[in-house]
Length: 236
Length: 180
Ligand code: SF4
Ligand code: SF4
Ligand code: FES
Image 1 (spheres, helix red, strand yellow):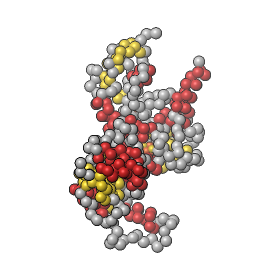
Image 2 (cartoon, chains in turn brown, purple; image 1 turned 90 degrees about the vertical axis):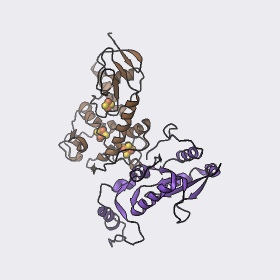
Image 3 (tube, chains in turn orange, yellow; image 1 turned 120 degrees about the horizontal axis):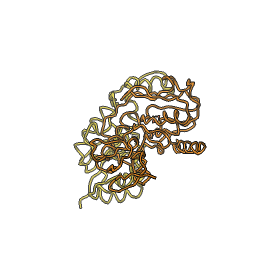
Image 4 (cartoon, rainbow over the protein chains, first blue to last red; image 1 turned 120 degrees about the vertical axis):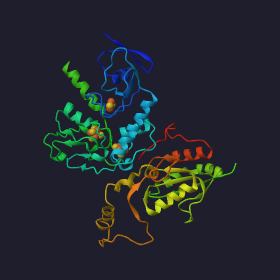
């Protein structure tokens, strides 16, 4: 099979053309932080955690949405990248209302884990304290906008894996919100099949099932990946 | 070596961080060898004295807290924000997207458990709540933070012990970071 030569953190690698930098890193055991990426779903470059430096390009690019090219020289571990990752993480916490001590996801949250990984001990930005709704109208599930970081993993799981297209996104910037159908209560959705895939895809305490209490949430985002892989097998 | 002085206080917090401090158990003896604890919330009402290390639990929610933290900043060589409320307002900050009167009404007028009289306590001896709750860092310079709700006894002891031995602790390096 044709391969191309690239360099990541001084390591010379032969990789398949057309794969993403993230894929090249994962295939070669090179650690890279991600949040909006979930294997099996398409990549959108929403969270900006997987930033890499590429020689000859003067801005940081997201590894999950940038494809390798021959002779690319990539760095994933510079001080600049670490600085940006820490800033991004702090902004996730500052933008909405993350009160881990009373959150269903406490102790089992990808955002908390991310904070520990980037060594965040405090948040340098003022908290915005936006008023966010908690939608409890669904018979089984809850959407708590206070904890949402707009990774859109739920949106993609719903449309790409379940094919229901219940979730979408409205507004931009600070006003951005995930919406159910045309911005109606989730419980009134005519597209939601109550499959629960969005809950599993969600990295935080934003989407959860009504039968869990504080700190008891368990998530299995890998089930989305597994499902996608198994479906591929069925097709071959 | 002269003994160092430690003072502790709780502002807008639940005292849980102090419970966690007590949970260092017999290691308090290691602390006591190196320092005197000259002030804590359960001793008496004296002014916060000059200390080497001030452990401050809780956020700034009222005129009294503001006065206290400004005073402590002057008295302490090292001001340590202890716990999520002090570091990032945590539960105490959950009222920040409401108006203060809504907060009072929720607690004293509309709460199922109240006596239905709907009176908001207003005695001059009581502290005056501010409109918004602030983490310590928005009011004074903070020298060190120990996040967690509460921080583990291990984390608290580790930080104290390092400072008492004139070393700078690194919670990240020893994998003791925690929120919630
Ligand atoms: S979603 Fe995660 S980071 Fe946010 S409050 Fe819940 S546990 Fe904490
Ligand atoms: S609800 Fe969860 S999965 Fe959906 S965008 Fe928000 S954080 Fe991501
Ligand atoms: S994982 Fe690449 S931008 Fe989110």
